[in-house]
Image (cartoon, rainbow, N blue to C red; front, side):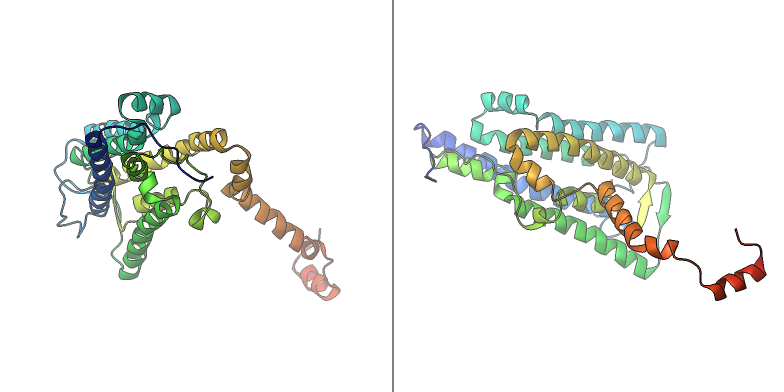
Length: 292
């Protein structure tokens, strides 16, 4: 029990190359997110960012063409994430590369799609808001940073090496079959259904300096996440069955939660609303006008 099934013996060289391939995906992910955070925040400041173009600043083409170009780049990015996450495509990739490297291949493709849209991004520097109040700026930058920290913490909750394909490649390198995926319900996932999505949405929107181009990116990727949640839920339900249903039952949809809270408040305060008005108050109200 608990022992890994050995894989068929292979020469060492492919497994060494596979390990470096997965390690490159692991390191590349950190490089991408560091670049993406700098890009989104126009760091160190909007007037003199380290990257040009940043999301808000840089050489600009006509706004309509810029928005169309950016929409195509973001659509390509989203399609890569969604299409390569589907089971038939995973099987196709596993037929081309060793199956333990399928996840690392997905990560490499995501990194390439991400760097492509950053490299070819066209700013639309029409300012929607620019808060210059120190307290407001500090609050928004704090929320921006917390969003990315939440994303990173959620990735650790899932098991970061497994999420990025390094764990699977390491098992293959050592001649073992990777462990089958398990439903992750620990740490942040005990309290929030999608902490990674919450983190990136904060990263998209929490900024004291927002332009049309930045808002278009935030809207596009937020809508993509809203659609992706439904696909992810179906995949998890198909993979983990009743275990997923039990875990999901602990995380009701936000709209349902609001309705439950509203119903509870109504139940608690209903007697107060329906209680008869005291005689003294009725007399005072009668002086103001007829009571109905």
